[in-house]
Every structure is written in C-alpha cells, then in structure tokens.
Image (cartoon, rainbow, N blue to C red; front, side, top):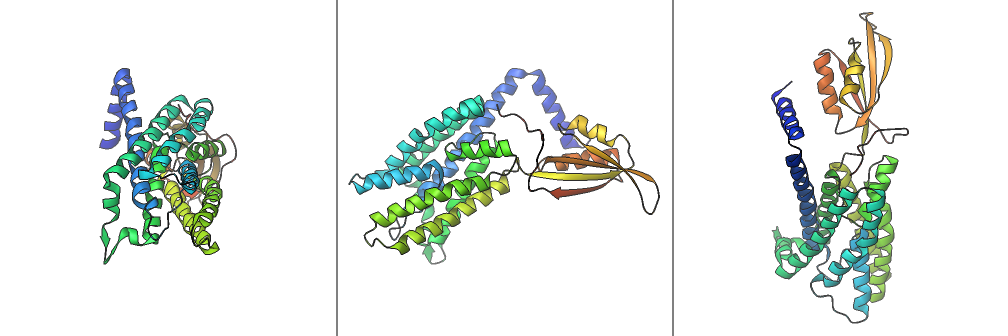
Length: 336
C-alpha cells in the first residue's frame, strides 16, 4: 500500500472513531460545494449573461432562464429591473416547489444544501450586481477589445461558469436547484450522464425567451430571435459538455482484467460495491490457465480497481472501455 493510501486509511479510521468530528467535517464539505457553486454561477450570470451589449442579453436555461423570461415580460409593462432584482426574487420563488420535490424523492441532506445554494446564489447575484465586481471582471481587455464586446466570448465564459457551477454541486452530491434537481433525479434513475437532460429542457426555455425578445425588440425582426436561439443553444452545449467533463459519477466503464490469480474476483468485490463475472480462458502462447474478470463500475472507480488488481497480480493485463448506458441493477450510493 503506498503512502497516500496509508494516509487516507488512517484518516478514515480516525474519523470512524470520532463520529461527531466526522459529521462536522461533512457539513463543512457540503457548505463548501454549495457556496463555491453559488459564487461561480453568480459571477457568470452577472458578468457575462445579463449585461446589455448591442441590446443583446444571453438567455440561460433552467430556473434562471425562466426568471429571465418573467423579468422580460415585466419590463414590457414598464417596470424597471434594476440590478437584476426581479431575477434574484423569482430565482428563489420558482425553486420552492422543486425543492419540495427534492425533499420527498431525492434526499433530505441533498435538499437542505441545495436550498442553501439557491439562497446563496440569489444573494451573490444581488451583491455582484450592486458592487459591479463581476462587471469589472468582464471588462478586462482581450487584445484591443473588452471581453463584453464579443458575444462569442461571453457565451464561452458564461457556459463554462454555469457548467462548472452545476458540476461542482453534483460532485458534492447536491445541486444548484431548479432544473438541476430534475436532471439529477433523471440521471440517477436512468444511470446516464446529466448534460443531455439539461440541454433538452433548456431548448424549450431558449425558444420562449427568444420569442419574447422578438416581441420586445424595437426592430421586431425574426433574425434577432434566430440569433438569440443560436447563441443560447451554443451556450447550453458548452454547459452540458462542462457538466459531463467534470461530473463523472454517472459515467460508467467496463474493466476487463486477465489474470492468473484465482482469487482476483473475490478480492475486488470485497473492496467495491459491484458484482463481477469470471470467464475461464487459456493463454494462446503459454497455454496456461487464466481468468478474465469483468466489472462495470463508475469512471471514478476504475483507477482504484486497477491499483488493487496490480497488487494482487503484477502481471495482470487490464483494459478499460467506456459505456454509453447500463441496464440492470448497478449499485449507486444512495443520496442522503
């Protein structure tokens, strides 16, 4: 066992003997993911999404996108939306029924820290808008131009911020609220990656927002609406890619181990909560008896499996294959 593994084992054993300390550290871990995720999203939202440049406002998806739609409708009736006040209010209000759903169908701890994330996001959006911190960040020069002067740069940075925010929350076993609750639930039930559900739902929101933009625009052109849909879909694609790149929990791989150790399968299933299949084989050159151990695991587990397998049999031949989807009783740690 290497130094890192020994240290991790000692820390784990120590925390099991000090349950109260373990619970406190776990709460701090959840708070770290909730607050960090909220800061990243609020920064992207206020710096790259809502600023008006050439009368173009990038539409976001999810509940923040719906709150943008409501703000846009309210503005049509002459109500001013100073410092994104309407978005901040409705972002919290619209999350309430989804948080109730989360409490009953996903997990209590998941729901509590998701709610903290939602409230923190509303606060940070308001703070960043009032202080101008995010705007100052977005007006950094890239060459001869400011970041905000390029719609494409805005889309890229906004997508990275939103995707990183959602993915960071998912890694911490919470969510950013809103549509992320729905995508997390669907991804957990179906055992697939979350990005595609996010993209599908957001497509409908982008279309609605673009229609309202056409109605509210002085030019009232179809081209303006088409541009809004095109850029918003590109933004959604970046968000989905970043989520699936960072959040590997629902990504599955098949690991194939060719070994001469008859006890390899028993050792692996005693260390991981997954089943395994053993096939008997024969080496073509050596004619020696071999065992092929097949396991389907999460993509963040296969390195540890390979490490243990190599300790059992240093000459084991290991292959890893990406999987599109898994059908059957694949074990996933329950969300608290």
